[in-house]
Amino acid sequence: MTGEWDTRRIGTLGRVVTGKTPPTVDSDNFGGPYPFITIPDLGGSVFIDQTARTISARGAETMKSCLLPPGAVMMSCIATIGKCGITTKPSFTNQQINSIIPNEEADPQFLYYVFTQLGQELESAGGGGSVYTNVSKFRFSDIEISLPRDIQQQRAIAHILGTLDDKIELNRQMNETLKAMARSIFKSWFVDFDPVHAKAEGHDPGLPKHIADFFPDSFEDSELGEIPEGWGVRELGSLLELAYGKALKEENRKPGQIPVFGSNGQVGWHDEKLAGGPGVILGRKGNPGVVTWVPTDFFAIDTTFYVVPKADCRSLYFIFYALDIQNLASLGADSAVPGLNRNLAYMSKQIVPPSDLLEFFDSRVKLFFQRIHEADSESSTLAALRNALLPKLISGELRVKDAERFVEVQL
Image 1 (cartoon, rainbow, N blue to C red):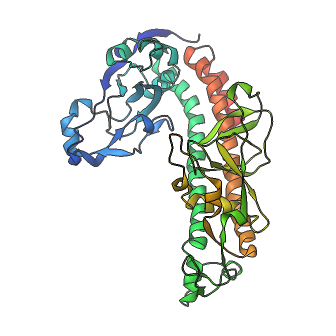
Image 2: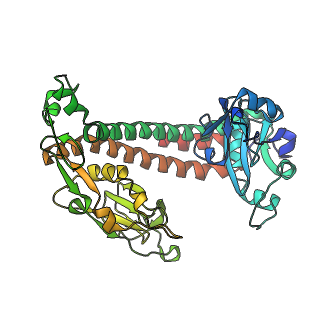
Image 3: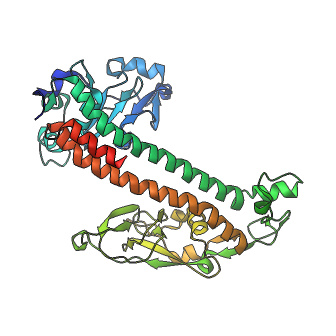
C-alpha cells in the first residue's frame, strides 16, 4: 500500500441517514424543488440530479430529519442492494436507501467508489442469502472499509476514476442528443409531415432545397386519413418479415463478441451470430413490442423476433422508428406471459414515402447511429478500464501515479 490507510466503520465517517416517504395520500407532498431519489434513479450516473419524482416544500417539512445536502453518498440497501449515487442538491431518498453525509475525513466521491465494491459485505450485513435482503441503518453503519488517512490521496483516487466516469457520462449525454435528433427528423418528416404542410401553405419548409424537393406540396386521402401526395399505405407484412429468434440458454453461451438479445435488450454474449448487423429486434414474449436497435451482428433468442426487410422498404432505420410508433405491445396475447402475434403485427398499417426519400433519410440518420455506436464502444472500453483500476486503487494495491499513466493513454 502507498501512504497510511485506516480501517473504519462507515458510521464513523459521517452521519448515516435512512430515507423515508412522505404520506402519499396527500399529493401536495410531491412535485417541488427537492429530488426524491429511489432505487431506479441510482446506478446510471455517479451524480444524481434528475429523478422521476420530486418533493414539495410541504413534503420536505414532514421529513426534514432525512434531508441530504449536496455531496451525500447513497446506497440502496433493501431488496436491490448496492446501487449508488451522490447528491448534487438538497435531496430526499425513500426508505430503501441508506446515505452518509461525510465528515472532513472522507471524500464523497472516494466513498462512492468504495461503496460500489461492497457487494459481499452488504450481503453479509443483510442476512446473507435471504430472499429479501435488508441492510438496516445500523448494519450499514457497522460495515468496515479501508481508506487513505490523507484525504488528498482519497481525492486523487476519486479524480482518476471520476475522469473516466465523466467521459462515459459525456458520451451518454451526447448519444441522448443524437437519438433525439434522429427521432425528431423521423417524426417531423414521416408523422407530422411538417415539410409537406409548409409547402402546401406556401411557406418555406426550412430545409435546404435539395432536401425540400423530396417532399410534395399537397395531400391526398387514404384509409389512414390525409397523407402526402404520392405516398402509400402498406401493411407491415409487405415491408418486412419478423423472423423468430433461436433458443440459447445462458449455460450454452460461449464467451465471444456477439451480443445476445432478449425481449427487453441485451442479455449476454456469445461466440456465434444468428444474423448480421445492423439489425432491429422486436420483443415477442415477456416484453412484446419492445423495439431495439443493434449496430452489430447479433444473436436474438427465442423470446424475440428480428427484422428482415423486404424489397419494398430497405430502410432499416425507417423500419426501426416505424415499429416503435406502432404500439405493437397492444397486440400482445392476454395470458400470464404476454406475447406478440406476428400475424396481427403484419396487418398493422404504415404510411410509406417514396424510395428516394427513404434513401436520403438513411444517409442522414446513419451518421447519427454510427456516432452513437462509436461512443458506446469507447464507453465500454473506458468502463472496463475503470472496473479494472477501481478495486486496486481503493485498496491501495495500485499507486495513483501508475493509474494516471493508464488513464492518459486511453484519453
